[in-house]
Image (tube, rainbow, N blue to C red):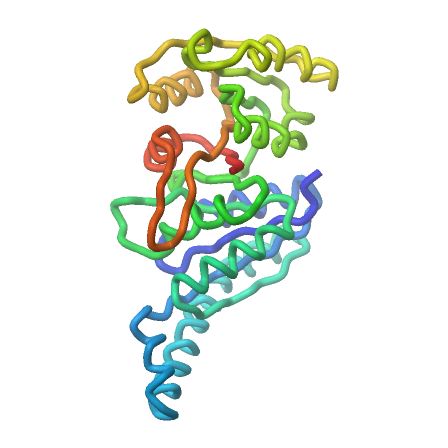
Length: 278
């Protein structure tokens, strides 16, 4: 069960989606919610630390202003969390992007679940980099909420994107608390005959989930590689799914990021909440 949840509250982007989604989920699960917001210090400011006391004072002033921006973002969260009567703690940070990514990734490793906002390529912001960094550093499940998301989070109908890989298996296991409460579960395969080894076929997955008391239905589709992500989202709409579960492919460093094609496409054009694990 998810009892200890981390949520990243953006400071440079609209925050309503993650506030609504995280607080409603924490209230539903009676979970504690740690909210963290980062005010970003320009990377160039870090180099003044070697310039003597005067330069160090300039950097500290910039960091304090960054913390104030983080605190301002968290005030909105605090008001909503207090109204919902949930257990929560706020963590304002002021840091250069690389340090912020490391801190958030480390914090995520101690939580059952992390909640982040879908990146928006139309807006240039370090807040776009944070979700991917958390995914690759957390070592656990990350729930991405579309920036168009509004209202309470629910996961009554869940789709498992299954290709038999290690990361898909990790995501499926990490989603166990959601799966146990689901009213309907659809196992989604794309080009299964070519892409999924027989030992980890969708039918075998369905049998193993059945031993946990989970009833599933399998939908097998065919698609060109470039069409996998839109095919999944089209099925999600047809099936009225509330949540997708899928592996997060790739590796990441702040200065050199590589995402798998489907992972990147999903983050760019997400229409429903998606739980990923790496």
